[in-house]
Length: 247
Length: 197
Ligand SMILES: [Zn+2]
Image (cartoon, rainbow over all chains, first blue to last red; front, top):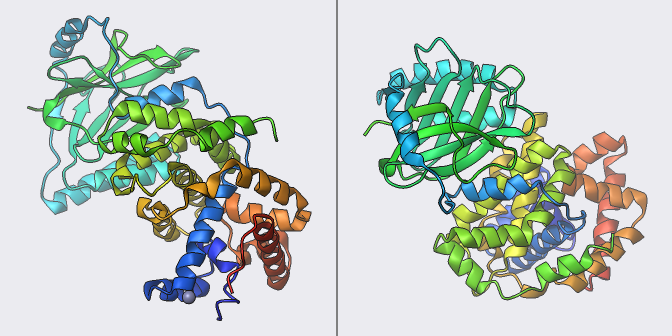
């Protein structure tokens, strides 16, 4: 292909929609620093970015801003008697703490069991993929909550310092109208940190992933509360889920 | 279509972002709030247009901003502009989601990721997304024939290759290629860009 024939392929390449043969040819040029193709690709990328301005802007729900900020650990001011929450947490002796075996064979079985559990907890394929990749991280640690409890909810929390926190829960009562579940990182010192909002499905299952590095050693527990739809900056008691992490 | 242009203008031609990038790189969460206030509406509008599902759009906007937050260290505040990068990440996250839902081309996830590395956006001219160009593009887009517009929309909003477009539209591949070529040529001319010779 001559450069002239490659004319419109730069834009398509930048959009990730080239056919495999065209793509390899393009990448060959780029790999040997062909100046024409590098300029073409920059033009293609710029064009792709510019196309992003075509749809009308749209106001996202207000809670989204809070959710995004919560996921990087933006803390709110004050106003929370959270010594009370710690006392409540300490009382949650039903929380059972365990670690994933470091042995790969055990881990494989565990992953397989998780895979089954996951399919039951969400039908959203992309979430299942995200969850599986989370489970496959070497340093993921697991906490089971609600074990032995006759009442809901039950489930597991997975914590990976680099990746974040994944919560799989079942038997969650449907949140009342206007309410939503909110996850919290409860530090050893300081107020609980909002860690994102989620809903349970009609069967009472929820799979929520906080994609953000967590300060594992400073975190005492993962908790969940019911909050108004836009989320809160401090948890509203009682705790729906409390999963204590090992020291 | 035109009513939101002043808003967009404010975003695209607002203050210098060097300081904002610096604060993002220092992990200042307030900077993420600013970034979101600047680009959240555009990103949400774009992603919602692609996935047509409000709940998924929220997840993907969150993923977009977290991705930018997590990768901003590779961004050169002296040279790069955030807008094109944020919009590219937003569009690619949405396409990646569409493809995973359709079970299409899982292997391309990696490919599309290459196009959203911050370093790729380091050599951008600051003017690439100024309001004049946005206006020119909108006008030019309206001048395309319905077929030309459709193929560009299929590429951009659905991530279809030309072969996939031909199947979708039940048209010969050659016809689709002609529409794509002509459409891009028209837009390029309207944007005042020289063709690659
Ligand atoms: Zn070349």
